[in-house]
Structure formats: structure tokens, C-alpha cells
Amino acid sequence: MPENKSVPAGDPVAAPTATPGATPAATPAAMQPFTPYQRLAAGLMALLQFTVVLDFMIMSPLGVMIMPALRMSAGEFGSAVSAYAFSAGIAGLLTAGFADRFDRKRLLLFFFGGFLLGTLWCGLATSFVSLLAARIVTGLFGGVIGSIVMAITADLFPPAQRGRVMGLLQGGFAASQVLGLPFSIFLASRFDWHAPFIAIVLFGLLAALVIMVKLQPVNAHLGAAGTGRHSAGRHLLQTVRVSRQQLAFALTALLTTGGFMLMPFASAFVVHNVGIPLDHLPVIYLVTGICTLVFSPLIGRMADRVGAMPVFYAGCAITIATVAVYTHLGPSPLWLLILVNVVMFVGIFSRMIPAQATLAGVPAPEQRGSFNAINSALQQLAGGVASLVAGHIVHIGPDGHVNDFPHVGYVVIGSTLVAALLMRQLVRGQPAGGAPATAPSR
Image (cartoon, rainbow, N blue to C red; front, side, top):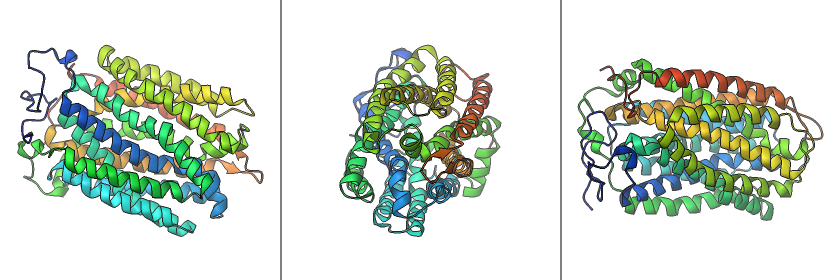
């Protein structure tokens, strides 16, 4: 299969893509199906999402086991969660200047290899300090992977297909709940909390092998005008100088707040506040994950069909309502918790999928790597701050009860309202195709 060295799809001046099996140019953009290679690439990117997201998400349900095992306080556990985010943010900023100078496939494999080494260290950690160090190393590599995935996705898929492909990528998140979290919790209960990290490493090695063999080089951006002309520092400054991209960065940071504030203490809240037995946690994640797996592609299709904004605003409204209910739950039956959890995740994904599809069209091709690296860095840094703030807002009582959790919900609701305003500003004046409204500053 020949290398694809055409102009990346989805740009204002893009030529028809040379991806094998591409749909003829006469096909209306809104009707373009995925080519066989696009389906393969989307599947591989979703596989990466599954592995990386599971590594981060597993900290939440394992928190109820890790904290007593390592004698960690709520603040220390919040630090362990945020350490990944802070190191990932720093790594994103450090790589932003040269992210567009290499074949994205090679860059992806390098950082994925480092991520697996960090995860292996987590699986061998025996103290708070060693776990903290392991999470820092994992974040340095894992935090960059998401930005590379987004850059590859924007290179291979035109704007009219991005809602659907973002839905598929979020399916990797859902699959981590359907398959990864229940199995990880089973391994942790059968052996100990280290076992899930070892399993992630083994699965990640298989994923890396498939990507190495099946994914073509992603290097079309190397031929774009201006690529490699400036130093890494200047390329970074050029990316952050664009006002519309600054708005996109702020939007991403706000959208991140919700998950990072709610997730670290979700398992402790469900067990000690809502009164759900620990052995029922896999059922909650399983049902929520299955529903998310079903709804994510539907949300992506809806965003492509009716537009990103209506879907995004509906997601904001659902998120606000369900977060208010969720954070105020007292002792409740399992079915009610699952219902609230499912609807809340549908709302969150109805925000994230159209937002990601919109953000993919903001940067020019020669700035995609840098833009996504910075965007991912700010996402992780904002998430780290959110985790630390949540760790200082809530207090764990002697009986394990999570106190002041509703205050976390108020912060999430406020960030959602501001994000809705920023999203409206971001799409104002944007062409229908999703391309940048103005050329980036040089």
C-alpha cells in the first residue's frame, strides 16, 4: 500500500485525498463513507484511546483499595492522580515546538513505548512515593499520545467525517469501561491493585505491534509550507499567538474540569456515601460503559448531521442537571445510581464529541501537531489543578464518608456554563466545512 503524501484532508485548500480506496471527489462531503484504510486507522486510534484512558481511569475505582494499602490520605491520592496530569501537561508544552517535524506514526510509537514503561513501574510500586514517581513518568509519555492521535485523525479525516470518527474514538473510552474497568477491578480483587497495571502493559505491547505493522506513515504535513522553517520555540509561539486557537485552548481546559474533579473520588463516594457495596462497582462501570459505547457513535453521527452546536448545548444542559443530582445523592438503590451515571456520561460525551470535532478544524495542517500538543498540555494541567482542588474541597471522614462533594458539583456546573459561552464564540464566523476562519499568523 503506497504512502499517503497528499495534502491532508479537511483543509481549506486540500486536494482530494490519496488514501487508498477513497471516495470520488464528486461524492457530497456529508455523504462520504469511511474508506477501508480510514476504518482501520480509526480502529487503531480507538485501541490507543482504550489503553491510555484505561491507565488513567483505573486510578479512580482502585482508589478505595490503594489509599488504605499505601496509607494515603485524600490529599495524597489527589496528588497521585494530578501528578500524571501535571507531568503530561509539561511534556505537551516541551514537545509542541517540534511535534510537526516528524512522521506522526514514529512519534506515536516513541511516546507509547515510554507510556508502557511508566505503567509497568506503577504495577511494581509499593509506596506512595514510588507510585507518585511512576505516575509522573507515565504522564510524561502518555499525556502526549492523545495530541498525536488527534493530529493523525485531523490529517486522515475531512471535517464532514470528524463527528463520526470522534464518536468512534470516544468509543475507546467506553470500551475501557465495558471491558477494561470491570476486568481490572476483578484482577485487583483476585490478586491486588498492582495486577491491572501489569495487564495494561501486556495489552499495550500487542497494540503497539499492530500499529507498527498496519499504520502507514503519517507525514503529509511535512510538505506543508512553513514546516520546519523556524526553531521549535518560534513554532510554539506562532501557534499560541493565533487568537482563535487561544479560545480553543481555554475551551478545552474548561471541558476537562468536570471529569478530573469528579473521577478521583467517585468510587469512594459511591461506596461510602451512596451505600453501594464494593463488589457492585464493576456492574456500575459495565452498564455505564455499554450505554456509552452505544451512544458515542450516535452522538458523532448526530453532530455530523445536525451540526456540532445543537448537540453540544444539549450535552451541556444534560451535564448540568445530572451533576447536580449525582453529587447530592445519599443512600440510594443501585438502579438509581446507574441511571444517573449513564445519563451524566451521555451528557459529558455530547459535549466532548462535537467539541473535539470542532477543535480538529481550528489549526492549519502545519500547526496541527503543535496545536494538539499545547491543547493536550493545557487539558492535563487544568485537570491536574482540578484534581488538586477537588482533593482540598472534599474531606474523607473516619468512616470513609466523602464530605462536601456537592461543592465539587457546583464548580463543574460553573465551568460547563462558561464552556458553552466559549464554544459559541469559537464557532462564530467559522465556515460550514469546519476550516479555520482565518489563516494562522506566521
